[in-house]
Image 1 (cartoon, rainbow, N blue to C red):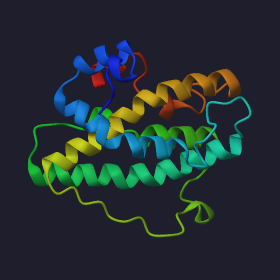
Image 2: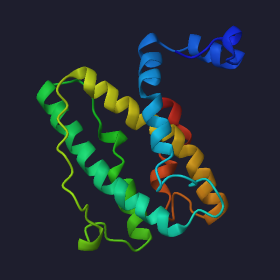
Image 3: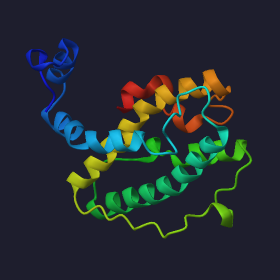
Amino acid sequence: MNAGPSQGGSLMQAVENSAISPARRLLREETHAEHVRLNQHPLLRGITKPDYPMSMYRLVLVAYYHFYGAIENAIDRSLSAQSVAFSYESRRKLQWIRDDLAILGIDPEDAALLPRTVLATLNIMNIGQLVGLLYTIEGSSLGGQVISRHLEMHHGLTPANGARFFYGYGERIPEFW
């Protein structure tokens, strides 16, 4: 649990925590360690820095292409199996990654770029797991906004020329979040 102002946390953090639902607060707390660990992954570490290599950025997009392919298939299977009244269509991100890769001249299905190990099939067994996955995926869109600004500033990448995925929903992010 996040510390309150009297426990060393900031007043802003306490106000922010009081404004979110208990479910969202729990999801945030339970995924925090994994979020921090992901940000330290060798492919992502430094992505907001001016000297971040474009070769690394290309590898990130290829990895995300394969990851989001598996994730979106799992979401589709889950929504069909559970008959949930929710459409994921407007939230799909795989096409954004495909677009970025095409602009950068990369075929993620090239044999040299395929995952070296078979990606595990993700089975979403219940609505709780689906909500947790969607929270994580949609939450990454918030971080993508920060990354998008740095990609434009340091590498000249915009949603129209190779940074569509990280731009995400852009100005519309509040309505999706």
